[in-house]
Length: 245
Image (cartoon, rainbow, N blue to C red; front, side):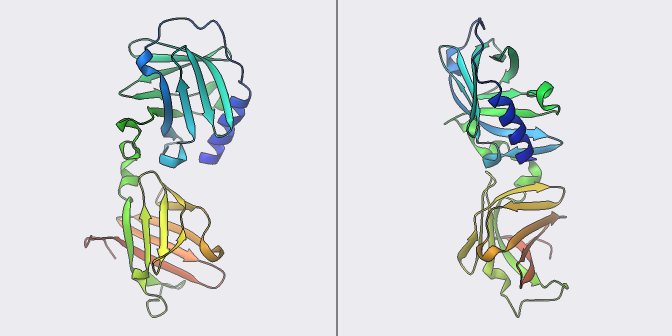
């Protein structure tokens, strides 16, 4: 979903590069500054952390505004009242709700995207920009340091004689970055996401291997596979003795 939304929004921004003039009204100078994307919800799935941090909003004290995603940028004007901010780009008004160092746009660019998309920006450098504030509860359960406690082969048999399970470790961060290691050596530093019991890892893995996770009923299993090996590591949080095996 991240790639699809990024592509659609990038196309829209590339079509709206000229600032709209004539947007008048008052503006609260305290709102001026740079904001980063911290939460994006569509199709019932919420993206946070690095998945949306490339989406930025900048409000200048002179009333100019810019929205950027990766290399694309659209400029316009902004005004505000006590509870909302209105950004006008290419004669289109985008209205957001003002929070504590945050601005939330519901149904962002719905007429262009054709989908419901809610996005929250937080002012850079404030507590509101911390990824921990927005991570969904189901994702929060996965954040932390994990260590393998058992390992199975492709047929489901015990593979601990071939590979030591606790050599395999995973750290999943609130910003959706991760570090996967084996025998104290990093084998991948992917991003991760969670959707309907599946933990998806995106990024290169040493030796061209693949990583896939499943989290259901408090049991977390990471599958490591390549052309010659296949292992299912059942994981347990470091210091946690309650994980089901």
